[in-house]
Image (cartoon, rainbow, N blue to C red; front, top):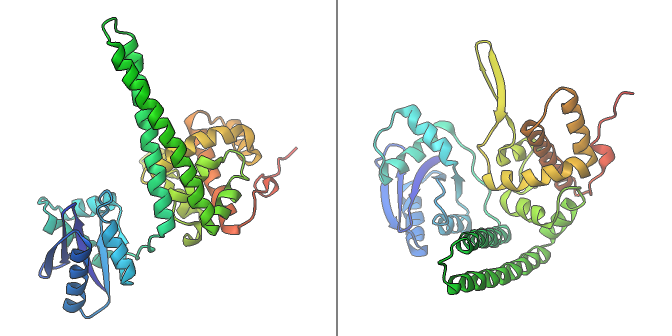
Length: 324
């Protein structure tokens, strides 16, 4: 396997092998990516795998073309790249250096290729994030209304404009919700997944959309532990001398953690499997955020099990018997 690293920016793609002897800079466009692929295939006769650090949406065309060409690639977590760079004592940071670093990381650690992106999931993700952005704008505008109404010098036109903008954005959220439902309904796999997830107490339509769009498909993960790790809600142990404790790992999806926090709080009262776990933790003197984090961990594992088994939630399979 020959590893090539690609540093992605809005305008350009810089590719390099681990030695830095084989380099190319290309435009970040369909034509530029195809040129890059042809160059790599002509230059290197053995099997190729690209290592790519995601940059907003600027790497999407690259992934699409690599998938169409059936070329292996790994989308690497930027935190992993940074840790590897620090371990080598790298000081310089340029596009070429970053591309060479990615290739070196792939070569030395023999990293596994990523799954090819699923178009329907990416569409759902794009629309759900757009709706999330609209909701943030609405909250910001409502806060502005609160501050404007406190001022005796505020012109009435300011309030009229703010309220008009909010009404327009609220219509956009309704439109986005309808389109999201349509996209999920049109895909049999995701439609079934959404229905199964909503059989779990604490999981509603919006949380189901979050898991469908932001989490890797459960059938691509061999264990629930991998799913939990991707969400960043697994315990991270620390030990030094006589000091030993654990805290929540935050190396996963911030969006999933944020959305699942509310779902976990709801499920503590409505989901018997989560309620049983919380009762056991409280008996051991645990409380506060630690209990909610454990509930999040359990809830995500239940979601994984329901999707993987393709069976509705059964509380009798998730509640351990209590000694009487």
